[in-house]
Length: 230
Length: 170
Image (tube, each protein chain N blue to C red):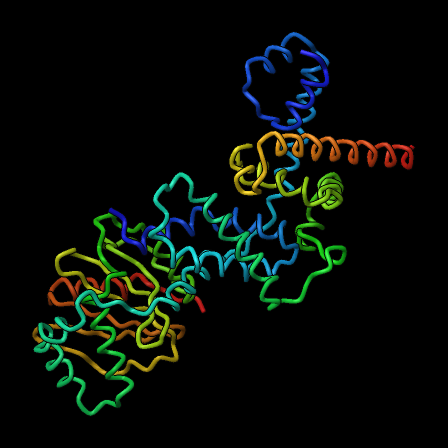
């Protein structure tokens, strides 16, 4: 192979595996040397092209998508009918609260039961992945304490939150990590839906679940293992 | 089977860095590049059902990004950036890099777009000649010629730089 053809080829594709190119380099030390130089330049080129990426870019992109995706109820009309009893109980529990707060809990309940984005796939979420998302709120969980079924950013009544589902896939417990400025004060306890609110300096946590023992267990462990650094 | 949300999250985690880096080299302004990347992923979310071949996800995102970038000029929503005034690498990274990297960075900036773009697609994104040809709407031979010329010019610039540096130091 002549010099020009060889050079054209390796300059166009420094990592070529073309047998003719490989053979030509093997047979001619000058060609081999030239190829080595081009590969070295390529390594340096790749280093220069790999400009720093903002640490929080991935989370920003997920937030943005959550903000633009309004909750989609799988069966919105059916939901109001089938969950009517639950809604009544919840409403009774929160009677006397102002309307925005009631609307917030209604929307949270919709996310717990019917929002398609939170469908459980059967693939567990790693603690590292959950912590990456919790970092958005300055939070971290220092030790795994149960199966994490899903962890997605979502919008509850206009509030960006992190919705974590844990425990049994058939009756998961929902943990909503919310900005501190969201007022979720109060208590929520009922035969069908258990609710608990944890207040931290940097965030408020709303925990909702249907199975009392599991719910209490997860809520206690969460409180024990989560920390907010802000 | 992955839900749409899970699929999107996988896409973001896997490709956001490469897409951002490509945007930086294409747009040459960090904050505008970040805006365009956000627009790109938002559009990707809306069209995610159209992504059938997950092996082609990166090329699909690059296609969206190039379209979003073109749309940016059409809408004239952003001010045009004078390419002589900005650097694709932020100052921090530049000051941290060694002298050779800074010279190489300057050499890349000296390349015309028709050479730089296929070079970045190949070296940064790992695209094949065929993939680059498809992205840039060129035939493969043209792409390979441009890649050859791009690296040829880089080598020439770098050799010249070192020659000057050598004389200065000697």
